[in-house]
Image 1 (cartoon, helix red, strand yellow):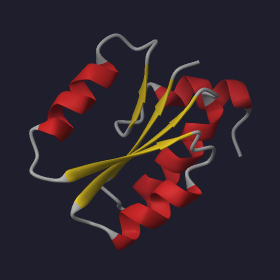
Image 2: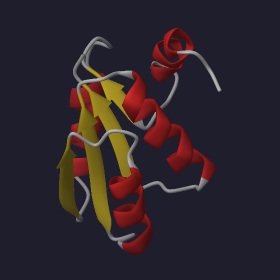
Image 3: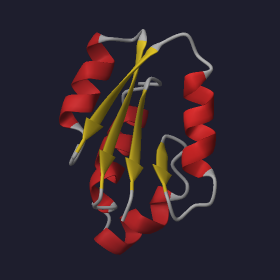
Image 4: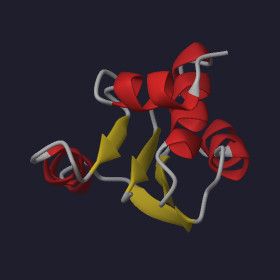
Length: 95
């Protein structure tokens, strides 16, 4: 398991994880989602993304965004979503 610092460094390389410190990444991601004909579910305080991942798996026609202020927490959800090939779930952090 990567350290907290390593997770922060990996956040910028995860296409499904948006963070405010990466200029434009949140806006670009939201723009892409809002052009799709899918409903959008936001989970505030998503932690490691367990609930968002479960929703994404059960609702493939909806987009789910998990948001947390702790930068390492959304990393867990984003990496697990990629491992499960879930393309309708995204993470965002505002640390």
